Each structure stands twice: as C-alpha cells, then as structure tokens.
Image 1 (cartoon, one colour):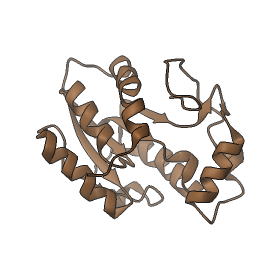
Image 2 (tube, rainbow, N blue to C red; image 1 turned 120 degrees about the horizontal axis):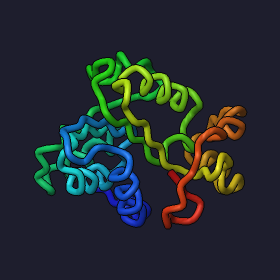
Image 3 (cartoon, rainbow, N blue to C red; image 1 turned 180 degrees about the horizontal axis):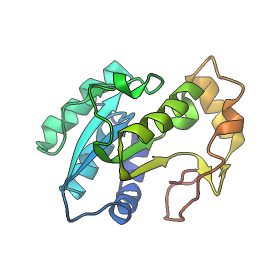
Image 4 (cartoon, rainbow, N blue to C red; image 1 turned 90 degrees about the horizontal axis):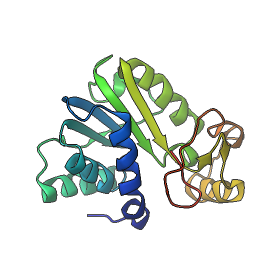
Length: 188
C-alpha cells in the first residue's frame, strides 16, 4: 500500500466537510476522481457508511494501492477501483450512468493535471451527478485565488512537464472557501 503523509493530515478535515455537505442518513453513491493511494476513500467510507464509494485513478500503480487499502479495511461500501482518465468524456468513465451519483469528490488533481482533466471533471460531473448532487474539490486555492502561485507552478512543473499556459489562469478562480483548519495552502 502506498502512503501519502499529506493524505493522513487532511483526511479528517475533509471528512468533516463531507459530513456537512451530504445527507448522512440515507444511502448515497459517490465517485472519487483521482483517489491517489486509497487513504482518503477508505477513511471516508469508514466515517460515512451510508455512502457507497467508487474510487478511481489515472495512475495504474495507484489502482493496486487503492484496492489494497479497500481489502485491508474490509469495507463493503467501497467498490474496486477503476481506471479513469478525467480528460475523456464521462461515457468512458467505467460505465457510470448519467444522473446516478449524489457526490463527486476530487482531491489534489486540479492543480497538477492538464487543463483537459479539469474541464473533463466539471463536464463529467455535470452529467453524472443527480440534479441535487454535490461536486466537492480540494486543492491549493483559497477565496477564489490560488494560495501560493510559486508552490503551484513548481508542483505543476515537477509533475507535468507539458504544463499548459492557461493552467495558472484557470486554477479555481470561482470557488468559495471554508476555513476549516485544513493544512496550509489547501482548502475545499
């Protein structure tokens, strides 16, 4: 199982936001786009047992880690991880049907992926979410502005050698923030 120290630090504050953002009393279906190691989805599944989670990841090495966390925690409300390329139309997202989800969650993808992934995330969420569904994202943006342009630029250059020029202009200019004691530079 892969381990990301940042996921350990931020999983509880994100879970607190999830609890405030969704109905915790009725069965729900959620897709986590870009599940990384699997630490988040298994933590959220333990804390919100009413939600059936579909983890997904572009990186195939991470898929094995997600499934290892799922097996380790023996969580019946977490489905096997699927390969998902957010830059593709949602019809290519593992058979997820239109208006079938109550929640789409995306953590730490927007600021390190090509613009096509961000655009695909929003287009896809608009299709697969139910009319009252919720899209939650988490990353290095705060009150409509990225919290550290140097941090984002360096991270983008390290992770994605073909950074699109528009990326810095488009990183979450339109999203409100919540002050929740999240790690520095990171907000929902």
